[in-house]
Amino acid sequence: MDIFRLNQTGYAAGLPVSFAVLSKDPVVLKKGAGEIVGAFRPEIAGTDPASGDEVALLSPGLLPAGDYTLECGPHRRTFTVRPDAWNAVTSALIKGLYYQRCGCDLLPAFAGVYAHPACHTAPARDWEDRSVLRRVPGGWHDAGDYGKYVAPGAVTVAHLLYAWKLFPAGCSDTLNIPESGNGLPDILNEAAYELEWILRMQRSDGSFHHKLTKARFAPFIMPEADLEPEYLMPVCWCATGGAAACLALAARVYRPFDEAFAGRLLASARRAWDWLQAHPDFDPFKNPEGVHTGWYGGRSDITDRFWAACELFASTGEDVFRLAAEKLYPSVPSLTQFGWMEVGGLGALCCLFDLKEKAGEVLYTQLKEAFLRQSGEPLTFSHASGYGTALPADRYIWGSILPILGSAMAMVLNHRLTGREDMRDAALNQLHYALGLNALDTCFVTGFGEHPVMHPHHRPSGADGIDDPVPGLISGGPNKVFPYPSTREKLGEDVPPAKYFLDETPSADTNEIAIYWNSPAIFVAACFNAMAPHQH
Ligand SMILES: [Zn+2]
Image: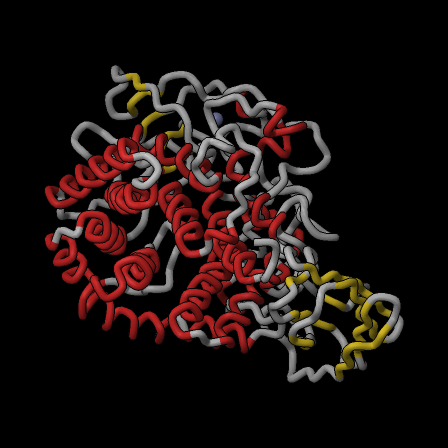
């Protein structure tokens, strides 16, 4: 049984190395042929509540590039420090979205053995008015299923666009996707594929259909074999707000490259905003009778409206949007949430990093103070964890990777505002978590590390007859809050939350993949990939 836990993709020269050890015995760190470069006496304060492990998190600080060996009694584990340690995994995480593309052939030149013909190409029927047929091709399959959902798509795109705005040097431009070399950075090419689909999901009145799915999830078949009819589901307040925000942001990002595209994006965002203004009373989305695909409903549209107002102000400079954002701001419950359910963090990102002082007293000065205060919480969580993981034991929910990487986003942004190294280092530990420094000794990104996830809940990976799953997809990870009864039956009650995980295809509750989990991983990996002093 291995007693070391580390980032299985290696470490970057110029950023602190950290690893965990499940022993109190002395640990020696050797470089190359055997030169001792570090010695540790692990101090274990107590049992780590989330994992039940007696574990010490150790850091030798900065290490020069090279091959290293950790030794503790009879135990050994090797790792590398490289200038470009996370370039490949960052690229793969972005390329992972390419593999989720719907409605186009995935050609062998770009998809290799994972090539397949175009899927879901038939026109979709309006659920509420079956006489209406519309062509709504494109977009990314949302997760392990083949549905496409506007609100999750909007936050995914936003994570990519902000990753590119803040960390352009960390976003690989050699993805080998069909658009590569067209003058647009590849991460923007990939995001544009989803944006074109989001634009198609808008109704003539400005609102957005919530989702494009069948009545129920497909079995584990390839997407081109999934021929059940798709439906445009009813409109949704949160989807309309999220789309307005994402499209307004995209208008700013794409304007220098493609004025016409930027114009379409902004016009669509404005129409969505106008619809929200004309429909002030939030009506939560519920799956219509007979529909059993993802809910993604949201309990309020406050943060969606807030984020939309911020982005529209940033893209137009029109005071009406600033005033709307200021009015909504006191009702925004959190500025450090970046997932589809709560998007206050994305509004904060817009204000703090794009608008800056132009946002004014409320949306810059006051918001910044609140953001710095709120982003202290994940640091506290990280310091309380035996593995440095910024998630308390009782919060290992379905898709626990999202709050973990969301915490990393908050701490990275704090670091960018304040220069605090403790924030940077704790954020980096969340990237390490995703790549293997965790209680399961598992790299949650397919195709990477010594012990990668091999059986994600992902229909193409399960149906393509290829042993290795589609690469560059991140698993949702342990979930003890709402596990399936079958998972509970297998694991029982005593397995601790951070180990409540099955690398098994049926376990959507612990091992599904999702575009909006890949995207915060892209944001965080791009950040640290850019910080690592490599080939640029
Ligand atoms: Zn498809």
